[in-house]
Image (tube, rainbow, N blue to C red; front, top):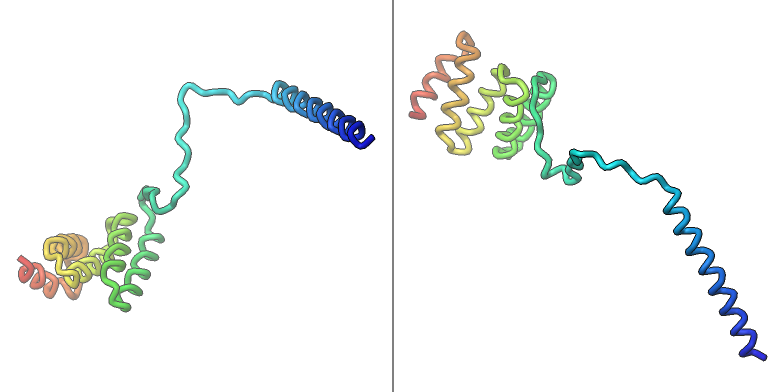
Length: 143
């Protein structure tokens, strides 16, 4: 008797499974297929470290990057500070403070050419600053 009960049970399960698979196929047919465009869109980069930053004029972000760079400068993390000051100059090219701090940081990193370029840009933007003569001497010294 147990063999017959097992056979009936398996037959019932097989019938239910067959109905379930038919309903899944019907659902797939009923679903609308997404339209394929001629030009496929590129999905956004999921890893933020690999995404490139697009810079546009943003003086508030520039000021924020200068403040963060000064924090790193106080911690003597010169590479991080230089990165922040460089980003500040990309957000706002006319930020003379960012150029000055970038020059100081590059000088500490012993990159004489980058320091000289940053100081020159600072002098171009703030030629009448109080420390302009001192910066001119630094530029001459870096040659």
